[in-house]
Each structure stands twice: as C-alpha cells, then as structure tokens.
Image (cartoon, rainbow, N blue to C red; front, side, top):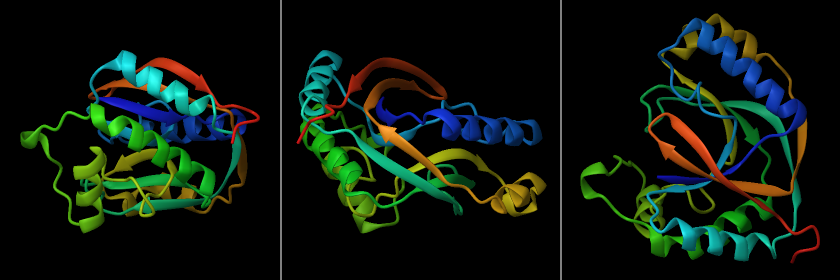
Length: 201
C-alpha cells in the first residue's frame, strides 16, 4: 500500500503530535495515534514504484505551491474504516488541494491492484464509485481533507476529548511539497518527497 501525504509544518505539526500523545496516554488501543502527522491525498494498493515516482514528479514539477487553513476540530462518528470515532482537524475548502488530488488519482489509477477479498464495506454510492475507479474511496468533492489525531472508542466518555473539543484553533501552512509513503499495517516509511513548483500552473 502506498500513500501520498501532505505533512504539517511548524505549530500545526507540534499541536497534532501533542494531542496524539495525550490520547495515547489514556488509551493505547486507539487507532492512528502512532501514525506520523499527515493529510492523506491518495492511498491505494499501487504497483510499480519507479513509474509512480516518475508520474508524481511530472505533476508536482508543474503544480504551484499553495496555502491551507485549519480552524476547526471535527469528528467522524463510527468511522467505517475503524468502527470507532475519529477525531481530526478540518482543512478549509481549497480548490488547489482538490485539483492536486484529482491530477494524482487520474495519473496513478492505472497502477492500482484490486484485491476483492480485501474490499472495504462502503455504504455510499460515491465512496464505492471512487473506490472502483481509483482504488481509494475519497477522490472527489465528497473528500474531506483533514489531519487525523486518532480513532478512539467511546470518544464522548473521554475527558481528554472534552478538553480538546473546547479548543479554538487557527493554523495556516504553506504547501510546497508532498511525500510518498510505504504503508504496512500501522507502519509508515517515507519513500520520497516531491517539491511543488513555486511558479507552476
């Protein structure tokens, strides 16, 4: 499994790491808490790493860097991927990030290897359609760009969660690079970073 990520910088990165640690101290069985801080643009069972690197490079070399704003804490209740409550930081709607995702997904979908016995149970037509077309259920306007903190059971009964939700946040990051990662269960290994073009289209 390969993932293309945006990695948070500066205060945003520190904030995410701090709260991952706090939730981990309370419940080590929660999911995603050990994952490196990131925003997933595209994650799929992709084959032929060398060609994938070439295709990503061809996109990023012509794609202009952009800024994102993060100002809200939110929750995916009963997350279909974890059966727990996933707490995350929302990224404000931004045409650039959706455009980047679309370009990457269109270029890389030819490298997707589908495994029928590992299909995720998806309860939405949009998710199923995206999964069938791109190998990732969150390509398109239904995607909610976000930085995950963790996926926690019975989140409403967690005191750290109550404290966290009361926090007002306001972060701004300049996105001038993306990164390709190898994902093996809970383990993540960075393969390569790709700089966006400061003067791209």
